[in-house]
Amino acid sequence: MSIIDNGKGMSKEMIAQVTDPFITSRTTRKVGLGIPLLKAAAEDCNGSLNITSEPGIGTELTVKFQRSHIDRMPIGDLVSTIINLIICNPLIHWIFSYHYNEKNAIFDDEPVKQALGDFPLTEPEILTCIRSMVEETIQEVNPHFSQDIVTIYNQPLRR
Image: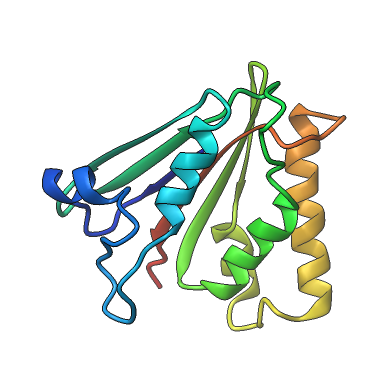
């Protein structure tokens, strides 16, 4: 799984420290458990975590898991996760890229947001439509859909 952003990026010093649960850039609390727990989960099943970043450019976090390892946790409800990212962060341009074997399919939320204009993403009919679009994206490359290699890109939406 990869998550790529075009945010503020991190220095080499911060990259070296970011897997420490007591290092965080947040000011609201003094711990940051997300990355350390993700790293531990990957390493517990013969996987790895890699972070590359450049200040002012952005960050790429890539985590790999041995898919067949008995201790690999399930990813969970991927479709609902993508929908929640979209509706909870409407000013971010989300691109969901789903990889299965050698195939790839992409769901880009920007055309949907542009077509809707000021109509809220949280309307039940809109949520149902977005859910169907994300599911169809996945089924394009994997008709037997399971949690496979996922890449999520986010970019600030320019309006």
